[in-house]
Length: 163
Image (cartoon, rainbow, N blue to C red; front, top):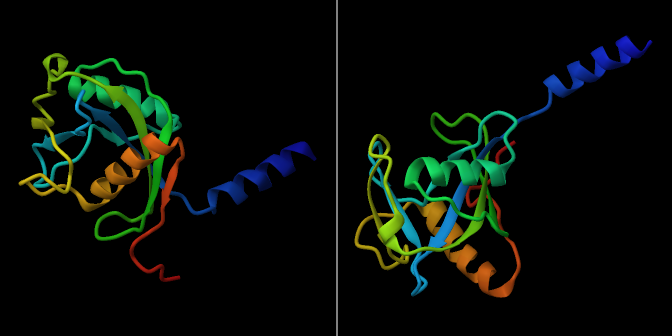
């Protein structure tokens, strides 16, 4: 009887919709400017972060990505923003994007993972000359406000949901 229940439960879970989990690190310099990075594989700037591995908690994914991409060991603090990103193009499932407060650093300790990143800068996303990913820009702005207010921002999908 227990086996039948477990098998039924497994089938039920398998048919549920899924989402991708992605993370970003809000790191600032002592004057409060956010750290942005330039991936070598796309045109827009973003923050350190990436997709969580299967079963990996978002805060640990953030810590891992910062070490991999920047060579920095940071304390992953408060969850500052959560964004729901609708599927589009090759992205077949929605993304839940978690932005964490990873503190303040000086730039002298940053060592870029050259296979993935080509540059970094401390710059507010709306003041940068170079294009910054729109989703990331929204999360950085919301994250800076959330850091000050002690809250977490929720950024729902900016595209209309079509069932």
